[in-house]
Length: 610
Image 1 (cartoon, rainbow, N blue to C red):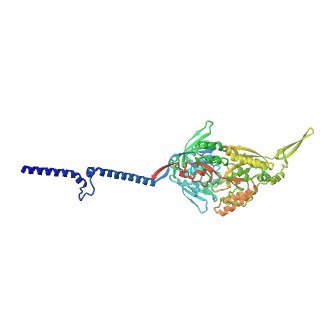
Image 2 (cartoon, one colour):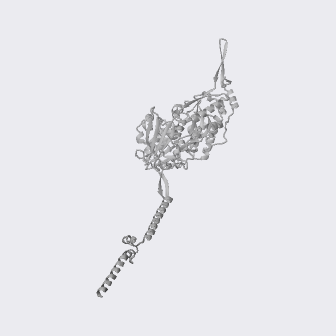
Image 3 (spheres, rainbow, N blue to C red):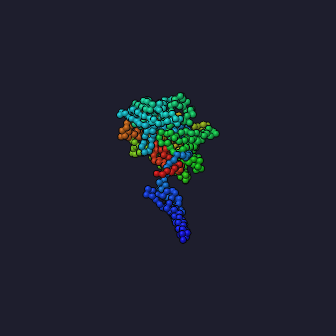
């Protein structure tokens, strides 16, 4: 019995040991001491051993659902909090009409191409933008004395030239004094006449004016030259230096390179962003400009995607450009006037007021705007543009009247008409008892730019003048040669061109007698002591009412004397690539101002969490 009892006891102990082994995993997983509230990793590893197959499947499904939910929630969060912001990069290629010659602030104002490149490469003490007008650029702060004669300007300490040198007051001094130096022949000289510039310290300059000059700050938008590179170059050699085409400035873009065609013309001109620009560095990495002799060729390049934008689209080509899907058209307002100027020195007939007025009476401005410009212009009748200080909408206007024009011509020596229908001086000669008649026709020569809009305008004027018996011959010149070969020597009888007003819309450069010769822009060589006095008075006061009164009287005198025929103010049309974002152009002072906020343009983007 003892043996049997012992065997039963052993068997009972064995079963008890087995049960305790099976429960060990559960105990290890589920058991928690008072001091431990979360299972250990060792306990978690034993969890699968206590789950049934169905429990394991449920757990797997729950875990999968949790992972999917977590991933979905994370993706939703990222998507809802992700924003796209501008990034540095990209390249933009734009077509320009003409060719660069002087990418130099001293001379760039006479060429749109030079002015465009100069605007991007150089900086002035001030700059203009459509929202605030004149704002400091290289200038950090400035003060104007109570008598409006002394301007003290502090330069930004962080402004640097593209070669790394700091911009200093000596650079400003050199630039202004070069403009003032007659040996440089800068067309900007008139803006700094009677101005004494001095260096207060290496970051402060002072300008003292002989008399108050209301538009003076606008004169300080001129780009500043690095004196360390230019000071040793004699004035007579300035037009010859390589710095005119490979400049070093302090602006948002740096010169990179240019390519030349076999015949020597510059084919393209590249700029790269200046990462060390003292302002907000631009985001577009590279700008490439390509040059064309005419707008038709440039538009073809735009259509063929050889370029992505065009600096200006004339009205007769606008319909074609609007069809290009990769381009958007902008129409900012701009103070520009297309005018026909008379030059009495080259054509003595213009000394006769009847001849000038007769020609004015033949012109139908509305017809020109509708047939040549497709309506994209505004008629003007005076040197003061609509909306500018002193504009008088009630000033005398000359409208087309062919019969009145003929009547005036009949009062000149051209009382007869040639067989071709032109007013003429008839003379008779007798030889061998035979009398013959000869006719000296009333013939005038009109010079304009070799661009379709100007040529068609000139042709329309010639056709209208013919109705009154006035014969007009048309001569054209390339835009790149207009200043040097035509305007500078005043080599024209009449010139049809566009005049661009400055930020202050000051008519002084175009009508004061001191501007009758180069480098002035008084293209009619007009001279009037009364007009000179009025223009000087308007410049010397900051009182807007006084300036307006002076300009109104000036306007009336010009309309009466008729040294030119004011035709129209064209709408500016800019074609730019649709890939460029954040362009905001509503108003510009000159074509170069289309780049006024180029630091805000961008092509590339990147995504970040907000």
